[in-house]
Image (cartoon, helix red, strand yellow):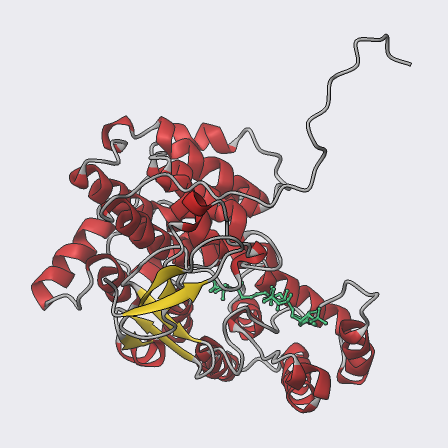
Length: 428
Ligand code: SDX
């Protein structure tokens, strides 16, 4: 007998007692699993009021602007931990000891190379392919190379796949960029940090030494930390659902990349910068604010709004500071930052945005930072995918380890035709 129950009175039936379950924090949930046997489904398109699973990885309080990874606030992690330490925390649940962290970093570092055969796989793409199109294809293709770690019921296989994905995503991401600009691929280097290695693979060329700017390296590491995980967002839910069919990890992560690509989700950072470039100058902001308010205009202010955060996205606060640090260090006076700051100021005082609780999200400033770092716009979401891979993996493993794990199979409200006979007469 549950401590708390919700009483549901269905027509012509005895009242049903639905258990109410409390978590460590956040909303209680009403366990509706028995409703199907009573002839009813819950109806919640877009999952506005649905908890799809139990999880211990990340907690978000949208009203208070709180984001915790294994209980630790995101602003503290961004300030005090490097990305790979956050990866360890997300995957294993606790902060690593020094020895554990050294071992973890060494394992990740030593698996950054990809099979040479994969180079030919890239050559099947047009040079002007969007790097996200390449990433969806190439990451999914990893399952054609690693037959030795595809038994998702095997804990060791799950761990090997996790390390391979975490290690190889930066290499594949940089390769997708190099391929698109016709430059030679750059091999990973074991003497560099995770973020530094990625920058080197992205920007170094055989003809001269590439010097990593430590401020840019730290900013890249922080961008990766800020995007590492975010509860049951669309792409993580995609990975969980794909994984629930016991599909291999590389195919599941490719599904997550495909979902993240959408401008309503991870593609917003690219779309946000494109929007700021379209606005161009501060005096044109009112024109775009009006478009965003116009119900007949599909235009939305990219980088604003969030399904969960209804005051501010704590990641946006950290990203904003990182943005100023990088622009100051690189002595860049980016007019788009002026546009972004003015847009943020106007939106914060405009009744429409206040009433709809539309505040800058993590994607609002990340595009400006990455542009300042010389990252091409087409790579923004690729970097988001690179960062989020650890979150996807952590949820994929948690889902497979969940007691009574079964394939996800939602039902529907059917409003189509009633049963009817197919005509035997000749087509008219
Ligand atoms: C990410 O889920 C996550 O955790 C995602 C993420 C993560 O880390 O994984 O945080 C990453 O995806 C951040 C969000 C990036 N997307 C954008 O910046 C794109 C612009 N934002 C919107 O498309 C929208 O705000 C969403 C998709 C983010 C949230 O959509 P919801 O919760 O479904 O909200 P909604 O579309 O129902 O909008 C509610 C109202 C609507 O008006 P009404 O129909 O009630 O009159 O607000 C309006 C919308 O028209 N609205 C906007 C708006 N976002 C919502 N109006 C103008 N500009 C916007 N950006």
